[in-house]
Length: 244
Length: 303
Image (cartoon, rainbow over all chains, first blue to last red):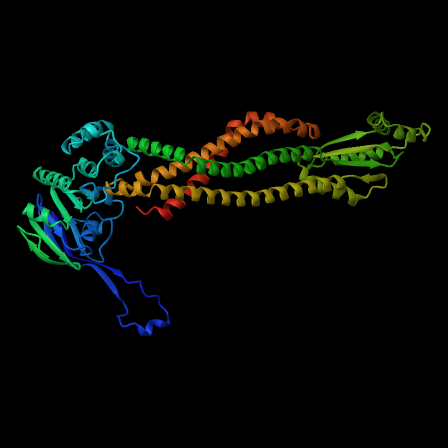
């Protein structure tokens, strides 16, 4: 279970240098820009949740806070009753292995083959070699890339690259898959393949948190939709549609 | 699990070491220079201290008597000295023996022989007493004691001259040591700076990889380890290279040193202590490498 408890993330505004020109400033002294404001969300296990909103609504910030890539300015975040926001740097890797992350720009290592990109995640987690040799082909089969596992990312299409990224996210057997605009760079055909893959992953018993601004995907899924606007949750519907 | 991770960390460090060939070479050269100076100073101090020890062993007091001094008088002084606790040995050289030793030593020097001949068979040299102390430090007090007694028959006490030479040599050695220490410190600083930059660049080059490692939940040491191991590789390689480079240098220099100071066999000393030398060089190199990597990792690798 994921629980965001009244989470805010604000950044100080640094646009105006502190000079004598201050007298012309009409803003408050401590101007801040908010990426998230008082967000409270509870996501149950095996749910498929879409986070929607315009660019800058706070979708990516929300996901970044979930994998502790950043820390909230206020509020607490829990994963399976464990407070992520209270963990020390030493404990973070363990939490991150519970969450498989997928990004719009794939974030594959260009110097490694598809197979190596996936096995890398297990190596980093300290898995023994036998387990790696067993698990990697398994997840590559799930994403349908067994025949291209020895190709480098530049030899793969965008959709194939994203499938490698999904395989990498799956290989640690995480409870949660978190996808930040995974189809943002893909054509419609590849987009649907990725969406179907995410649905299948969800059917296999994993929580999926999908951030997207693709209306068609959200409407097609017919699952829970959380709508963000200017850092606030403005709508949270059990069988939602994309309306903004 | 720990061993598997260690293996992977070392493997990844070795890869990054090879891929950053030029930078690695620059770092090793810089480490090498530093280690070279340290090694040179080490060997120099071995030579210097063996010279000093040798000289200290040779320190003695020679008590020269006026020619024709009463032999009984001399023997009385000898016994008096021998009774002292500080004195190890007192050797008596009679007038005749002194002359024999003197002519023997200068037998090839015609001028000296000629000037001796001017005395027409008379012995111009006095008898002498040679005093060695239990401990060279105590010689000064013995010499002072003798000077205070101010024997009529004593012509000259030649302790103070030697003492000056020894003091000067010791001063030179300590100056060389402290200058060398300054040089070592400056070079170490530069070496650490170069290595620090190498690691910083390596971190920058690998930033994407590091980011992904963190995303997939690599532990802190799995991310940091390779950079520290790279420091170890730089240090141990430069230590090994420098130690090997000293072989021909010492081999060439050793005969020249032995020419001036026959007691010192630098090459023999070096070969018999090679592994110790290698160990010291590598340890210093690894220390420098790990130090610079640690600084770079702490500063630039926020996990």
